[in-house]
Length: 161
Image (cartoon, rainbow, N blue to C red; front, side, top):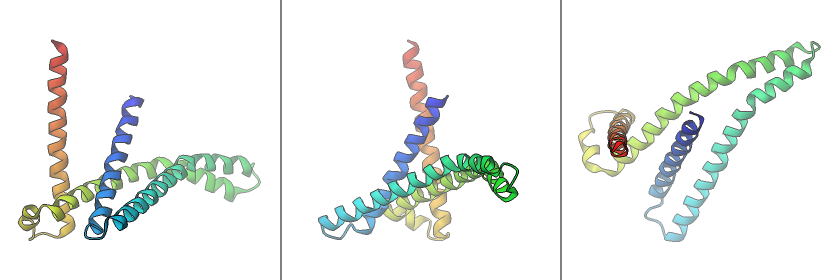
């Protein structure tokens, strides 16, 4: 089960990285190649350091909380309170990030389609852009899930023979 979660997290990171690169490249597509390379490289580096730095802080959030609790030793109730707050908040923060991250991924994926496939953009002109991007992201996500499940079923039936 742990390996499956790790594989899923790596795949999600990969997809988000591709989306960020595509968005960055889209902003400088008309610029000279050297500028495209510099901008995309800078965005990739910044996104990697930013995302993994934030993840590192999250991973250490409960460790900092436990350390503050240990330092308090009944002498400093404020440190103990902050430590307990950090420890108790981590699961809630992770759940919130799961929801926010999923929405962000759907919006970015939908945005890529809405802004680059003119037929989709023209068809959804009547709705707010963010809603159109979310709707398209959900649709593409559902189609992808169905294709993946279909391939998995075919793979299972092939392996049974």
